[in-house]
Structure formats: C-alpha cells, structure tokens
Image 1 (cartoon, rainbow, N blue to C red):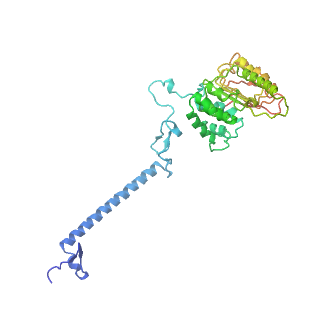
Image 2: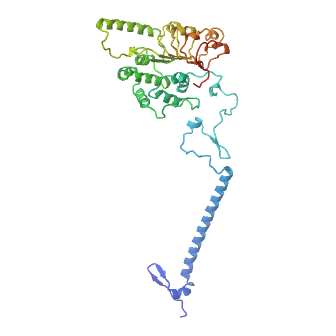
Image 3: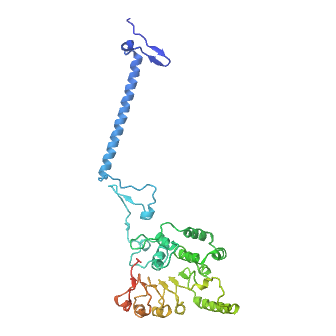
Amino acid sequence: MSAIMQPKRIGSHVYVPPHEFTNVLSAPEVTESSKGVNSLLHSLRGEQYRHARNLSRAKGSQSEANPSGRNFMTLPSTLDYSELHGEERPVRTRTGRFVPPSSDPTTAGPVPKSWRKPTKAEKPTLEGSAWRAEALSLIFHHLPDSSGLTSHILRDTLPPSSHRPPPSSRVPPLSFFCFRVLLSLYTNTSDFEDELVPYLAPHMRRDLLRYTSIYSPLSNAELYTLCEEGHADGELIVVGPHSSLRSNLWCDTLSAVQDEEEDKEEEDSSWDAASPYDASDSPLQTLILFNAALSIPTLLTLPPTITHLALLALPSSVPLHRLPSICPLLVVLDLSYNAWIGREGVGEQALKRVEWGRLRRLEVLGLRGCKVQKGHLEGLNKGRWEDVMVVLDSRP
C-alpha cells in the first residue's frame, strides 16, 4: 500500500487505529490540529509565568514596606475614622504606616482664632455634653446610682481614663433608651407637662433630670414642671443659661408645707392615722447649680437638709463663709470652675473665711479649675479623724 490510509471518521471525531498511527502522523489535518494545541499550551504557560512573576514582585515590595511581616492596616475599610481621629482621615506614609493628621495645619500667614483648638490655659466653653459631664462628674460619682444610668452617661460622654471608677455595667439601662425616645416625641412644653411628667415615678423624674442635665438641659418651664415640689426625689439640677434658679423657690415650698400640715391637723388629729406617700415628704438633699446665678438672698434660704452641694462655674461670687451655718450637713461640696475663687480681693479671701470646723461631715471638696494657693485651706483638716479629700484636677 503506497497510498496513505485515510482515518475513519465517527461523527465529528477522527478515529485512528493503533497499527496505522505512524502513517497518520504525516497527514495534513492532524498536523494542523497538533500545532493549535501546542500554541495554546505555549500561551497558557506564558500567562502562568507572568502571573507568578507578578505575585513574586508584589510579595517583594510588601516585605520591603513592612519588614516585620505584618500589615499595619488591620482595621476594616468600612471603619468610621472620625471616631478615632476626628473629621480628618489618617495619612498613609511611604512605609505603610497610618498616622493621624497633624493638629497644627500649615497655613499661609497667621492662623485665625476660630481655627485654633482651645488649650489648657484658655477658658473652656460652657456648652456641650462632654463639658457638662466633666463638670458634673465629681458630684455624680458620689450620688447613689441604683439603676446604673448615671455611670453609663458618664462613660458615654467622658473620655476613657484609668483614674475613673469603672461603671457598674457596660449594658445601657432601659431608661437610657426610653428617655431618648420620650424626649424626641414630647418636644412641646405643654405635651411634656401634661402627657409625660404625670406618669413618671419620683425616682424616674430624678433619673430624667440627670439625663437631661448632660444631653439636653431643660428650660425653666420644663424644669419646674418636673420638680413640682422644688426637687425630683430629693435632687435639683439647674443648668444655665437654659434655666435659672428661682429666688423664692424654697420660701414658697416652706409656706406650702406649713399650710398642708395645718390642714392635715384640722382634718385628722389621730396620731396613728395612715398617711399616703407624698413627694414633699422627701427633703432636698442634692443641689447642683451649673453656670447659673445664685443671689445672696437665695443662698440664705437654702434648706439645711442639703448634703451634696455643687456650685459650678457661677457667673458671680457668693459668700462661701455662710455655708457652714446654712448647710451644716454637707458631705460633698464642689466649687469647681469658679474663676472668681483665688482672685485678688473678695475671691482671694473666699476660702480663708470659711469655718471648716463647723462642717463636721464634710468628706469631699472639689476645687477643679480654681486658683488655690497653699494658705487658702488652712484649718480644713484641723480636729478631724479623717482628712477631707480635696480634688484639684479633672479626675474625681
């Protein structure tokens, strides 16, 4: 057989018997198919080689940028960097590290005053929940907190610090979310007075008073609607300039209580008659004034039952030497952020004239942000079994 045997076709495939394979190799059709397979394999090997080379280059550049073999960008890309570094995003350096933006931006010419960040020497602003929480933190840390609301508010607003006592629970209490929703619904003063306050128990009114003193200070109408008897479960917090302290608050309360006692004696003179609970039966024990004016006549009418008193950032000076005779049961006295304490004149003698020996129950004295000199507190611990804790910085 001199002629080349043609392979048999079965469908679209070519079948070559084994004994005729040597002859078929020289067929033109089989030669073309083998060339196509070889070119395809060659292109695949080339792509694989280029891919492996790109991977090796990427690993090499990564090892040069990161000698320790770790990737510094361990946080997810969806993280809100404003929570960590403010409004500006961190800048990535050539070495792969992420650094926060510079606090002193480069500007052409003098930096405007509105662009500057307040320093420690500058007077802090009296607005903002963080500043109010910092000012009220000392007095709040010495008040009972059975629900855990106060500790959660401070943890939510104050920066973390190892000097602050840990909160009782990291889980927010239910009242925290309820107050947020209720205040967003009852924005009108009339609705707040008619539809919300009458259904709150005394201890819930106290917690709402603490919550609003940090996040959303109440107006005068809302404050005294919440504190019908002059306080909410023994507490009164006045945050200015949103609200102010009424000058005749305790005079009206005292006269009203006397009238009620006379009416009760006329109605029922039996000594063993059961009397219902009244909010006025709980005396005022905690008074907090923040950036609110306190006149001398109002100071002289403070109830003697006050045990926790905070006079914070008062706009004008008050005669502190009158406090031992007005409130002899004080346990915590916070006079922080009063710029007039320590100044020449009346402020220089404000602490020296106080008869500390008459405040026998005093345990904590707050003077944060005040110019206190060495001789201002002479006689504070004289004749005491335990020294009074004096707080001079921002850490309670």
